Image (cartoon, rainbow, N blue to C red; front, side, top):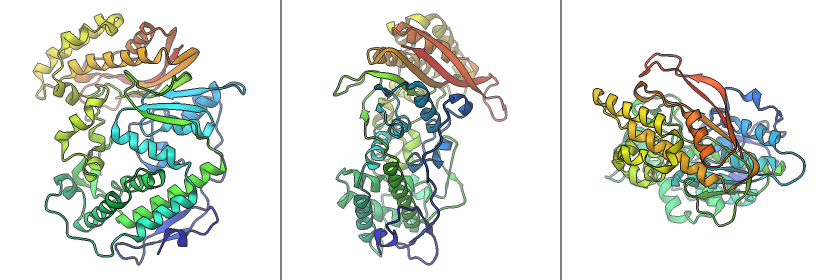
Length: 464
C-alpha cells in the first residue's frame, strides 16, 4: 500500500481514517478542500491586536501548521504588516533575526517578497529549513519519498533496546515506542541524506511525536511525563495524516505562487555570519522575552528521540549556549559575573536603571528557596539585545522600519522595563526613534502567580 495509490491526482486534501489497520498500515480518504483561495489579508494590522504575539492561530494556516512552536507569533499579522508597509512595485525585503520555525519567512514567501532569517537553535533551524525548502519541491517527488518510506517500514517491529532514555519510556507506551523507533531507525539508515523531500519525512516524524505521546504538555511545550492527556494517536496513522497535510499545503503554495526568495541562516543575531551583503527594508521579529522560558527545554522530547541529547543535562552544550540569555538556567550554567556584564559598553544608555534592578534581584534571590540567577540573566539579556541592535543597524536601509513583538518581565517581583530599555539600546545603536504599542495585558489573573506586578505585551516600533 502506497500513499500515491491512495491520493488521486485531484489536488484535494485528505484525512486519516483510523479503522481496521495493523500497526504499520492505514488508509487515506478524500475530504473537502480547506484552502481553496488565498487568505483575504486586511491592510490594517490593528485587527490582530492581542493576537500578534500568539502562535496558536498559525495551526490553521498552510505550512505554518506543520510544526507547533509555542515560542512564535502570528503569521497573519506578519502578512498584514508586509502588505501595509510595502509600497509600489519596487523592491522590498524583510529580515527576522529570530526566525524560529520560519513564520516571517513563510509569510514573506506568500507575499512574494525577499526575506532572510537568522536562527541559532540548531534543531529549530532544521525545522524551519525543512518547511521553507519543502514547499518548493515537486509534489511527485514528495509523494515518492513518503511512499518509499512507508513501504519500507517493517511489518514486525524489533524488540526495544535496553538503553532507552527515561523521558521516552515515560512518554510513550511500549507498542508506540517500538513503532516510532522503527520509523526513526529506517530514516537514519536510509533517508537521512538532507534532500528537501527526505527532510519532510524527518519533519513529519518530528511533528507527530507529541501527538503520539500520552504525556501532558505545559503551556510552553515543556513535557510533563507525570501528567496524562487524551486523544493519543497511533504513530503510523499520525504520520499518514501529517503527510496528507503536507501534500495538501505544498499544492496550495504552488497554486498560489509562493515565491522562493527566502533564506534561513544558522547564525547568531548578535554577530551574524552571512554569505552576502544583506540590506532590508523591514525587520519583523519576536525575540525571546526575559521571562525565564527555557527555549532549549521546549525541544527536549524531540531531540532526545533523535538521539541528539541523552537528557536535560545535555541541553546547555547542545542548545542553550547558542541562544540569547533569557532563562536563569543559562546564566547559572555559565557562571556569569554581574559587575562584568554591567560594565559592557553596549549597556551605557540603560546602565543606571538596569544596575538598580539587577542588584535588587541579587539581594532578593538570597531570600528565595531556588536562588535563581535572575540578576545575571537580566543583565546578559539586555547586553545580548544591545548587540543585536548593533548588528542590525548596518543591515537596515535608511527609512527602514523594525517591529519587535516583546513582553516585559518581573522576576521575583522586580520589574524590568523592557520596552524602554530596548528602545534606548536601539537609539544607541544608531536608529532614529522608537515607540511602544501595547496590545494586551499579561499577568493580571493572579492565581498561581509568583508576583502581582502587572505586565504587558506589545510592539516596539523602531525607525531606521
